[in-house]
Length: 91
Image 1 (tube, rainbow, N blue to C red):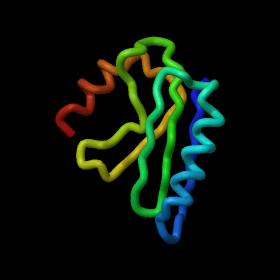
Image 2 (tube, rainbow, N blue to C red; image 1 turned 90 degrees about the vertical axis):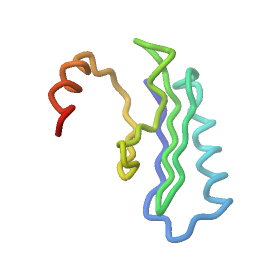
Image 3 (cartoon, one colour; image 1 turned 90 degrees about the horizontal axis):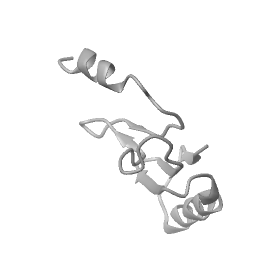
Image 4 (tube, helix red, strand yellow; image 1 turned 45 degrees about the horizontal axis):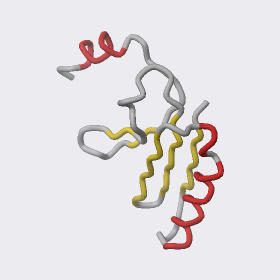
């Protein structure tokens, strides 16, 4: 199971808050030793320690929408991703 850290509703970004999030993420690294990713922006920090089950070479997180307005970190595998991608490709 991956490790996920989220700090939300931050009034003001600071080096101290980012450092705290990184330390929290490091403490969870044993849960996901295959990839570490972090998003810092606006009023949120999201960190992900990935445990790769299906494809160790891809799947880095957090995930971003094409316009980078939505950020997602998830623990799980989507096995029908090709069908989902085809269904929503033109929307």
